Image (tube, rainbow, N blue to C red; front, side):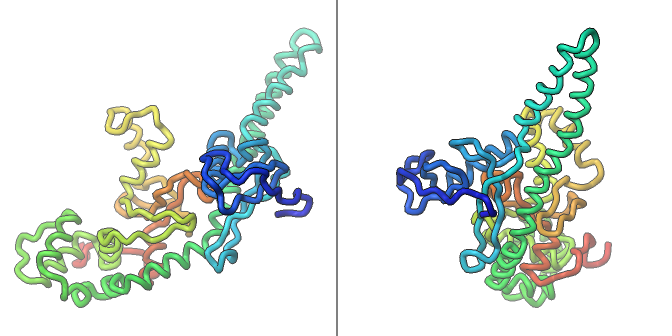
Length: 337
């Protein structure tokens, strides 16, 4: 909580005002409200207001809330920290400013109103750009603050899955103890074929070829195992290919287009025409993630103020922190084709 913020208010009631469940520990609100919210409902309410009006707001008094993430709290697992935001950069405030400016010329005589509207429109554009930057700053700041914790979570996941490092280093040696049936099943999941594979070594080589590299085979193996890495928000990171993630993103920004319809496919083709999926990694900020790559995206989507616009970890960051492979994953098959 920043200097000048009010003291956190103890709620008068102990039941959450949203879900009505008894709260063992209510959120210490940064405003003057004395209403109980459980952590889950408070978090979701802030995320909803951020998406709806461009700024996190208290669900009761509608006061703007500043959100930060303390990576050292809770024994190194991190914790969201709430304070009173001093600036109002919501969409509603922007519209109010436009209305105020556009009516200033009403009493100035003929032509005055038109000049006022034009001035208001120019001011609106400038302010809209400023507010968009402020909104993006919130998303970027939280991602940067959470980065050390997310890296540790990926490292812990990799430490619990030592086979992944072995696969990335030498799949022939790492997978030789697997049964032929298991290797064939994994190969089918990757869209490969066991035709012509007489030995385990052939199946492993076919697996590496289908994944397009040993490191990428480690990624696909981790996804097939079903043990999901934990997201910094407490959710689970789900593995998805680049094209699938592009479809998810398009569905979120164009809900008016039914998935699978002609217009949806046309917009998707335009959106991915540069070969990228349009997603930015929240760890390394890489914005050129190609469709042939993959990502780990949080299953909670935008349901938390921790990442109110989704959370994604690119394949290269997963390999670096969970598998210990720092080089960019090769897009070629083992034979260099």
